[in-house]
Length: 446
Image (cartoon, rainbow, N blue to C red; front, side, top):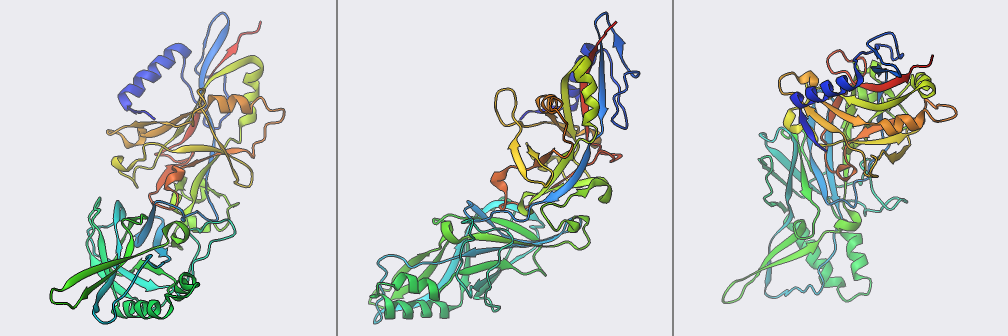
C-alpha cells in the first residue's frame, strides 16, 4: 500500500478533473446530472458522491490461542472503556528429570516471560504482575481453539507478584519469582510418581498451569509477550551441597501450542459500543456521534452499506462508471499520525454480518487502500479504496441487494494479539466524513 502526501493527491485530483472536465457532489446520494458537467459531442462526464451508511459491528469471539504472542495487563481508555488481558498456560515436566534428595537443595522457582515490544496505554506507570495457579486444566473448545471470551478458574491468592516499569519497545525477559512451596510440591510429586506409566498425565492433572494478569489500581497498560518455548517457561533454581557448590537450573516447558490463550475482558458501560451484544447487531453511526470503531482484539469492525446503490443502475443503461473511490477518514482526535496503521482490509459481508471474501484488485491481489496523510489539516487524512470492480459487479445484479455490504478491519494476523483501535468518521461526520465518490460518464443519445 502506498502513502501519498496531500500535495500529490491534489495533483491527482487535478488530473482527474481535467480528464472528467468537472467536479460536483450530491449530499443525499442521488446522481444529479444538472450539476458540474461538461458536454462533448459523444458524452457528458461527471464526478459525484453517493451516500453510504457506516455502522460498528462486533464478532462474538476472537481466536487467541495458537498465536505467536499473547497479552497481559489492564488499560482504561476514556473512549472505549477498560480492557483487561490475562494469559493462560499449561505446564509439563522436562524429559529425564531427576532429583538428588540427599544433596540437592531448592533455591527458588520462577515463571519467565519476555515482552515482544508491543504495548498500549501508559507505560510510564508501574505494571504490577500477578501469577495464579489454575484450578482446572485448559481444554480447547469444540472448534479446536480458545478465544478472548474463554475463562479458566484460578486460585485467588497469587503464587507471586512483581511490579516494574516496562518501556515501549522493551524486550527484556521478566523473572516472576513464585512461592517456593510450588517447587517443593513438584519435587515431591515427581519423587512419588516418576516410575508410573501415567506420570505425565498425572502431573498435568495436579499442576494445571498458570494465569498471568496485572492489578487494576497501579497498572494502566497492556503489553505483548512472546509465545515461544525459548522465551516463556518455568525455571527451577537449585544447587548441590558438595565441596564446591554446583548451581543447577531446570526448565519446565509451558504447553504453549496446545494450551496458551488470552482472555480479554471489557468493561465499557459508558461507551456507546457497549450496546453491541451479538454478532448480528449493528450500531449505526447516528447512535455514536457518527463515529465507528475498529479493534481486532475484541472483534470490532466497521460495516459499510450502500442504501442508494440502485440509483447507479441509470448509469449502466446510458453510460459507464470509470472509477468508484471509497474514502474513509479516521477521526484524528483519537490517534496520532505515527499510529495510523499502514493498511486496513476490506471484505464482503452479508445481512447477518457473516464475513465473505476479501476484495481483490485487477491483478488478483488482496485489495488494500492508499493512505493520504495531511499533516497540515487533519481532516484531509484518509484511506482510499478503489472499489470500481465491486460497484460495477454489484450493479450488474438482476436485483441489487442492498443488504450486502463491506466490512473494514485490521489484519487478521493481529487478531487477539493487539488492542490498537481506530475510530472512523461516518458519512454524516462534519469533520471527518467518509464517502463514496463515483467518476462516470453518460453517452449523449440524440
